[in-house]
Structure formats: C-alpha cells, structure tokens
View 1 (spheres, rainbow, N blue to C red):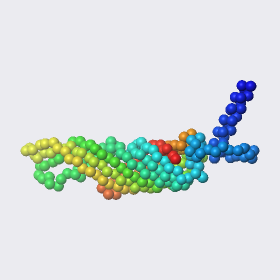
View 2 (view 1 turned 180 degrees about the vertical axis):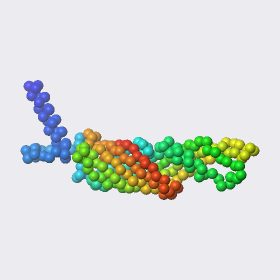
View 3 (view 1 turned 180 degrees about the horizontal axis):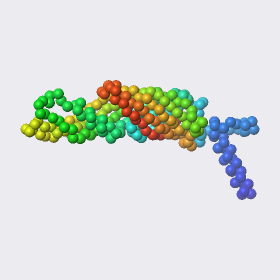
View 4 (view 1 turned 120 degrees about the vertical axis):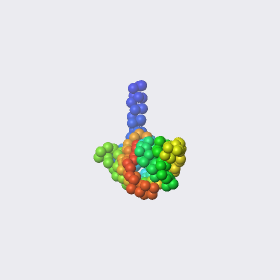
Amino acid sequence: MRLKKEVLFLFIAFLGSATLCSAQVRKSVKSATFRQPNVTRSKARIMCPIFETSQYPYQGIGFKLGDPFALTYKFYPNKNWAFAVDGGKAASGLYNKYYRGAFNTYLPDSLEGGETMQYLAHKATADWFLETKFLYQWDAEKLSKGLQLYAGLGWQWRNTKLTYDYLYEDGAFDSRFGKFSETRFTYGPVAVLGFEYSYFSLPISAFIEIEWFTDVLLDPGYQRFQGGVGMRYVF
C-alpha cells in the first residue's frame, strides 16, 4: 500500500513539472485532454527558460565586471532588438600610461628659460562613465540552447578627475614639489559585439561583450578596446 502511494505521488509531481514547461514542449494529442493548472507567469519563468517569443517585452537589470565596472539595464522590446544603458566606473589602472602622457598637455605656456615641470605621479580620483547602446540580436541555438549573439552601436560619456604630482625647477635657483588637478570630460561612439546566455532554471542571463571606443571631443582619434562579463535578472 505504501509503495502505491509513493508511485502515485511521483506521477503527480512529474505531470505538474511537464505542465509548467509546456511553453517549450509541444503537446501530444493525448496530453491535450488533461486540464492544466493555472500557473502565474512569474512562476513559469522560474521553472522554464526565459525569452519566450510570445512573452516580449522583457527587461533586465544587473552588473558588469571589467572595463568598466558598471550597473547595467537592458530592455528587450522584441526578439531581435534591444536597448542597453550602462553606468559605472572605468578601470583607471588600465589607463595609467595614457593619463601619464596627458600630463604634458596641461603644462602652462608661461614656462620660460630654464623653468621645467617634471612628472612624478598621478592619481585618478574619479573616473565615471555612462553609455547607451542599440543592439541587434540573433539566435545561436545551433551552438548552444539559450545562446544569442548580438552587435550594435552606442555612445559613451566619460568624466575623469586627475591629480598630478610634479617637480618644478628654475635652473639652479628654485626647486619645489607641487600638484594640480584636472577634469577630463569627453565622449564618443562605441561599437559592441557580444553574446548572451539565458538557459538557466532561474530568470537570469549571463553575457560577455567587447567594445571599441573612439574619442571625438577631448582627444580626437584616440581609440581603445573595452569590455567585460556580467549577469542580469530578467523580468
């Protein structure tokens, strides 16, 4: 008698799980005769993969690690198009050589004769960025279930505050240490390429992307690769 109860319990559990994932499994003629329980959309998402074609639009919010470290929001109006906004802090350590080279652009024109200002060190006390991106996505399920590739274009704004330490010398008559601060605000376009994976038992997606940034304001022609990895909660 106990064995029969356990078998009946397992049968009911199996039937319930199959019903929850009906969006991914095609029904047979026989199964269509069973009455389905009412399941909320939020509960179905927990049990089944997200990004069902009939359930758009979706939204996602999460984080990205890399250059930059950012909070990220993504809006999915349909299967192929998406809009993303990232905001956070750039990896200042990756720009040390560039910021050191920028020291010479801040030297005053009033230096005369034997006057010199020698670079000693610098520190990025703030290095923030904001970017928006329009993305086109397409399925890559032949490679892996739940995998999407995407590419797009966007615009990035950067605001960096730098403090420089220097040595001032005026021939053999004067020598002293000093420091000054400069704020660098600039912007430019970005090109994006990445992939997103979302076949999890929870409503989350993971992504990896690389970006190509070009400065068009403060240092026209300056270019750099950026990118990172991240996750978003999708709802």
